[in-house]
Image (cartoon, rainbow, N blue to C red; front, side):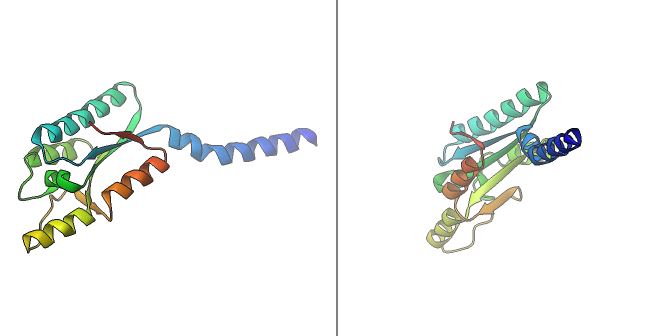
Length: 146
């Protein structure tokens, strides 16, 4: 009777902890870009590639979000991105990388320009880049600002 109860409690504990263990298996990294500097953009992309390569060599999973806001949003603008080709290539090669664009910044740029601004097809709009970074860190994501 006691053995059955203990076995049941152990199973319950495993069922509760299993989702936490699954979360621990994926390394999650948020990379921040808030500068309109092609060298910095390339550094961000180099960091992302290096991180992906490292974890692949370790046999571990990794997920990367590159979060842009302020002048860094230029990286994801269809009309001005100096790294558009690299972003397209990386998105094709790595399904575990995504590119976040701050809607606050986008709206400000559109007001200033007086017209809509198109983003690269890889860009995903988040309400606020800064808040998105905060939320990712609260969820346990590692934070990197090259």
